[in-house]
Amino acid sequence: MSKPKKTPPNFETEAEERVFWESHDSSDYVNWKQAQTALFPNLKPSTKTISLRLPEVLLERIKIEANKRDMPYQSLIKVWLSEDVDRNRT
Image (cartoon, rainbow, N blue to C red; front, side):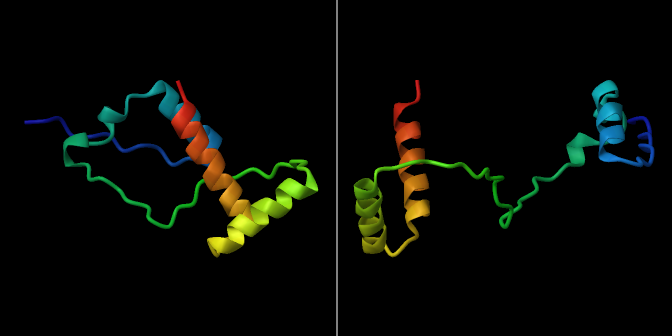
């Protein structure tokens, strides 16, 4: 028979909760054998805005390729960068 689980305290802030979990074992509070996988299909990854200077001719060529694919040129740049990083990571 497993011991009863403790109830975690109520936290005023996320920072307070973070400090608590950094110093306490979650297995004292959660029965991980009963845990289920959570799916978040609408969760979008965090993004950061950057400034990137490109030659005008290159930007026009990128926009033409994006139009051929019926997608925004910024999205095409992200796809190309992601593919290149995935292909060339060591």
